[in-house]
Image 1 (cartoon, rainbow, N blue to C red):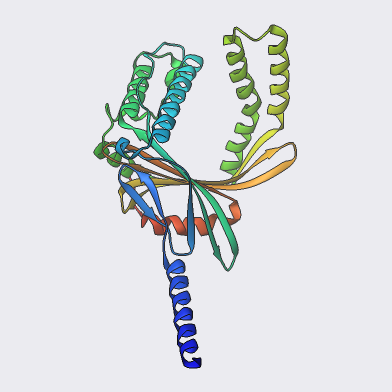
Image 2: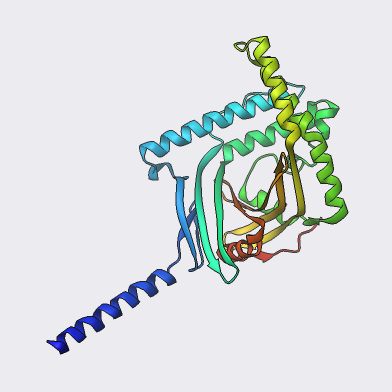
Length: 314
């Protein structure tokens, strides 16, 4: 009996070790849309919070309803912005602008401590990108001088429709840039100086179009919005972007390190992004974390995408 118990204990311990090692060594998968998947390193756990596949055949009823709502709200928002910020009128954006999206929480631990991040993936439909290029082209050809100035670097100068090949060529030609120090501080100051007026002007236009709210309530909302806008501030210590080669092909990556401030409170952050062209649309990923975890998540994304720098051009 003692020999049998010993064998059972040995088998149980071996099973626990095998399961434990399997859990440590396994990697999680995140959906980047359009048939692209990324695998985390073994030390990083990915938890799916929200997910709508780009392939309509893989969606359940709830996911199909979610994508319909997202597209309707996106189209309405884009058309509202076009009316508010540009002098000429446009054909309204219609159809799908988003093919799918996903949101994951990532967690990992190293000798520096525990790291948490959020990964948001948005897959922009080719039809929406083509309509955007068309609007850019119309502004450059027929818009006011003020509107044209907003599109001096418009992609429509180089392409008339979206395609993976066109997008990759444009991204590969990017020279890349890093902004720090005094130059960045000057840009941040200009942004902070413009925040109150930008927010106030936007809300004033929205209130002006609102036929249901009373004049008294509109004044109260405008006053409150103006007060809140003055409390907001942004800070940045590093901004960069560059073309890269990934396991999915040519892409561009960029990052912003800084902080958001409100009424004396300051929250540091790091935002790392990738944009990857595909035949059906553009997949854009944003990873958000505390700035102290920037190096950790940069290394993790380099692992996931197998990132290699490109020289760029132009």
